Image (cartoon, one colour):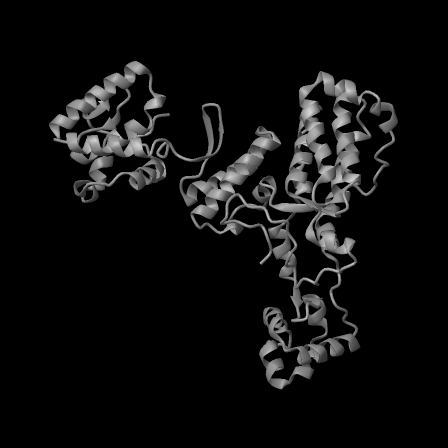
Length: 441
């Protein structure tokens, strides 16, 4: 649909237009209601007299309508464009707007493509999920979640990344974007076991060789990786394989639910439930709440600040205190907590991720290679017959030589990595541009 000023809901097009054009003073000082009140105007008051589009009843309306017209001329048939363009020529003479119209043309030539609007996804000539304003971005994020079944994984991944990038560019907090969009954009990690489970449950039930082989190759590649945590391009490629398999099998597919299950949202949720001392020792806040008497070793003044009127601990105050407590005081508190039976929070980074990811998995894991021998012999034939299979398998095979994370290299050298405080270092950095980094602050 062609948009003009009266039909520009939320003034999305006008907002984009005003960023490119230097609006004249007569436009800035115009009565806005007068420009929008077009319902009772005669057809001659529009440049497009057939569809009553592009009002030219005032000097301001003619100026703005010409900008709207030029940014959408590709949507018009050739004859319609010529007819409307001629009407604007008459309007320019009537309102003495020839210099202004010329400036609009020059500005648009310099900013070619800017005013057509930005979208999260473009397929052919169709655009989806506008991201021109913060309001656009939030609505498009919700719409992508609601309609994700209409797009295969590569398309919704692309849309999600563009939405996240647009949010960062306009300064929109990424916490306002639904967590499901974070997963679709690849802003998360998973465990190797979870990825193997996703592949195995499909592979063991598949009798068609052309569908089973890509799954088998993924499984084979995953067993060659040393890292127990996966993310980034590795999981994106696996997600593409799973999505393609599910769609060919006629099943709904959302592999990102598992392959990027542990997002920053999940990390933040855990971070809100633990408190970390300056030496890196962490405790569940619920455990500290049960052992409030241990804080007596820090002195009455501190305890008074930590406790509410009913005697319960103010957990947010406890978290702030432990993060700044001197080491000597921290040692006393740890000893007091130990006496009361409170042990530090000692889950590994892998276990933290598994705590979120594993509940999504089936309780049983079948052997992944029960059918491997029967199908391995036809792999070469499949690659020769199906270019898509060959390309997919080559991509997955490259995973075997993927560089391991730094902490894995440290383990190979028998050098234990430094203990991270809280959840720092949890994420594999991945960003659509320099303004976004999916890491835990």
